[in-house]
Structure formats: C-alpha cells, structure tokens
Image 1: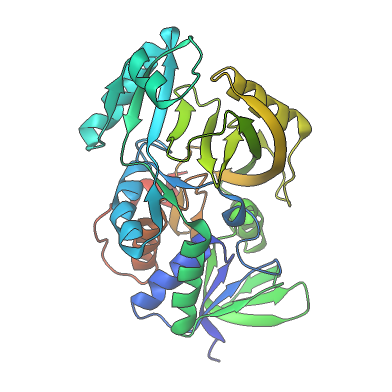
Image 2: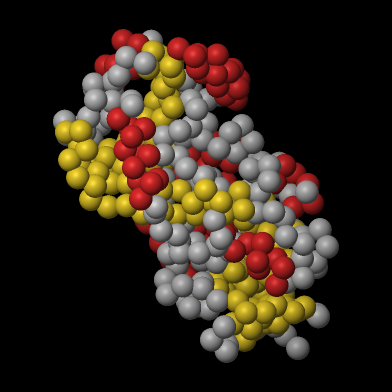
Length: 361
C-alpha cells in the first residue's frame, strides 16, 4: 500500500518549515508538516529575539551561521545592527580567547578599549573596560523568514496540518501515525523537528532519546530613560550573563537564563524579569520606566550543545532535525539545505554534516 505521504515532519516551527522548503527545492514532494498548536511557530520560533551573529553558539555552530548569512541577506530578512561583547578587567583573558577562537575562522572582529565602548553605549558603568565589536552582526526578521519557508513549501504542494499533535508512531513498511484528535496518516519518512518535544517524539517512535533538554529563556521589553538609540548595537558580555538591544523604540533585554524546563508553553518568572533588569543596571546607568511586555521561550540543546541532523542510528526511516538551541533561526538556510540533502541521499554540499550526526552520542 502506498503511504499517504513521502515525508511527515513533526513540528512546523523554523526547523520543520525550513527543512520542508529545502526539500521541495530539491524536488521532494508529498510532504506534510504536523503542527501541534493552532498555528506554526507558536513556541520558540514565535518568541525569538533573533539576530545573526557568527560567534553566537560557538565554533561548532559558526560554519552553519556563516553559510546562512548571504542567503538571509539575499532574501531581505536582515537588518542593520552590529554586536558588541563587553568585558571587565578580570575578563580580559576570556575576551582575548574569544578573539583567538573566531578570528582564524574568518569572523571580522574589532577590539575596542574603554573609550571605544563608552562611545557606543551611553552611560556605561566604569567596570566595563574593553570590548569586541562584530560590525557584521544583523537583526533577523523572524516572522518574515518563517512565513517565507512555509509559503515556499506550500507552493510546491506541502501541507501543514495544525492542531495535529502526535499521539503514536508505529513502523512496518512505512510509518503509521495517529494524532490526538483522532486523525491518522502514513508516511515513508518521519522527521523529528519537534523542538522541546524532540526526545518525546523519539521515544514514541521507538528510538533512544538523545538527551535533548529544553531550557527556559526570559525576554523583557522595557521603556528606559534616557531613550535608547535605535542604532545602538546588540550588547552582551563575555560571560554570557545578559544581552540587550533596541527594538521599535524600546529595549529588549534578557538575563541569558537557561533554566531546565519540561516541554511546555513557557511563561516568564518574575525573578528572572528582575534579574534581567538588575544585570542591565549593572552595565548602564539607565532607568527602567516601565516593563511593557515579558515572555519566555524554550531553547533545546543536545548534550554537546550542537544541533542534531541525520538518520537515527537504530530506527529505520526516522530523521532528526532538532537541538538547535538559540541559533536555529540564524543557521536555518544552511542547516536545512544540509539536512535536506542528507534525507534525500544526496552528497553533502558545502558543510560537513558529520559533527551534527545523531550517532555521535
């Protein structure tokens, strides 16, 4: 019996949507995306303050980020920003190691002294003495990019089923999938692009979980005085304890928290909102006049903090596209192209997929 679909992708966030788009561009057909919520991108994708920064995620992620930049730019989804990483006196060695790690990889970086960083960040407190500027860091239009991928896939016949939460998965000559609302379908290939639910989907499909853990990340939108310059870069510290950036006349800030969480509809904790404000106030002499909005999302990491792309080592027909952490959006073009070639049995193109294979665990 011919399956209903060739490929069923669990999850229609950025991971699933970009993979579907990459697959149809390579000629794949009969694809369905199974989205558990009422609309795609409800969880991590829809709550991202995404930016494209070559150093974000570390050296193991950098090849995917660097390769994705020109594609995002050509599609028109990047905006001007810049990224500044700050350090205190005791952190200068860490800042130097940061430069040593990424400069040989071709990442453009400029070392700035106290005078240089204070000229960029008004009312900077005295403890911050140096920084590294990445002028190429850019904002990403997350919603626009996500819709681009969904539209591209749909134009080539891919279907998106919403409120289609997976209830069971059984395989014989094909996958037989049951949904919580009673619907069922069959597919030749099952793709696990379920984000925070990736290990749960793997278990349901009879595969060993990889230890992909969801972590809560808190974001705050605040009105501050003095008003933030819209041209100010993304500002973070070398210890990764905060970042903030201007957005639509307001300031977006986070304590860069990573609190282990069950897979859920994440909500911010008041203590994390307070920590975000406190850490910002340790950097700049600004007053928070009002917290206008606060939210949280889940970032899911594999044990080695690299994403997972490739066939499951034991379960036939199960393909992983998970564990993208907080860098799944900035790496989406290159990662999805690489994953699509793997899934279709094509030779790798520009990036070696071996570091991201599921069988590394």
